[in-house]
View 1 (tube, rainbow, N blue to C red):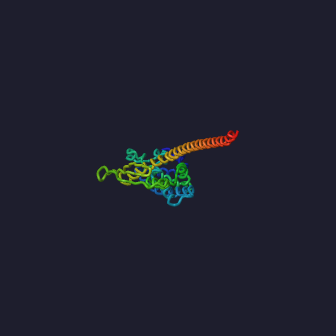
View 2 (cartoon, rainbow, N blue to C red; view 1 turned 90 degrees about the horizontal axis):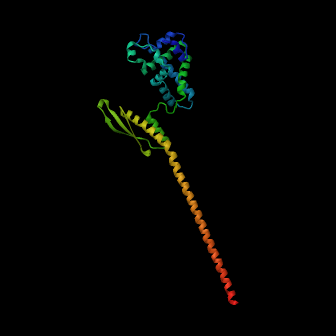
View 3 (cartoon, rainbow, N blue to C red; view 1 turned 135 degrees about the horizontal axis):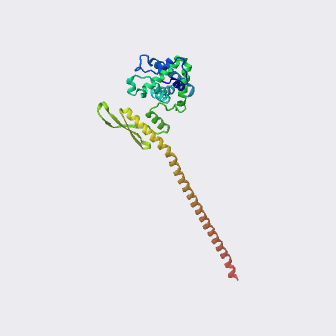
Length: 284
């Protein structure tokens, strides 16, 4: 096991390498395993991430901070960080776990990473652990949207529709499949105003609704991103054209009326001239 390579990736050089070895040891390998270090590392991780979020997002309230933190320290997030570090190649597993692919298991990798944080704390103190955790999370925080991270699909769909002043979606159970102990629910999600109808399936009604809401949100976002420009531009062009025709017609009609009026005036003047000249001719 190349411990130097792992320490380089962590950005921390251990004074007591035995702590690192214990952090990498699964309970299937030996009695001196990493579960106590995992417990310690979990608490340190929560504290550090909370501190980073507090400093980074100064306009977010306590509820949103808690939601974002919970998603950053959950198993999947830790697993993804462990994968990027290729932590699996440093694990110390028992023969059974090796054969069953334990080095790929998300729970084992996530727990081991927490144990490593605990080992760093014992080796060099809180600030050393904070430095390592912060360096691992900084690339993630760059792309984090604290207003949406951790919110489920139903919540995101509801908030999006409310922001557009569109009525909330409707969920209906369309069908259930399978035996009673292993049912699959087919759920319909409707957004009547936009004529959106999608379907989702899941092992429970809630799971089916979440699946349907996710599809509905994607559909609604795409629909609204295209619709406004097309619907607004065409009527406006049409109105402008109609206005132009109306102006031309009005101008033409005005010119015709003007010419007719001028012709009438000319005829009237000629008649007056004729009436005035006739008496003079008779007198002569």
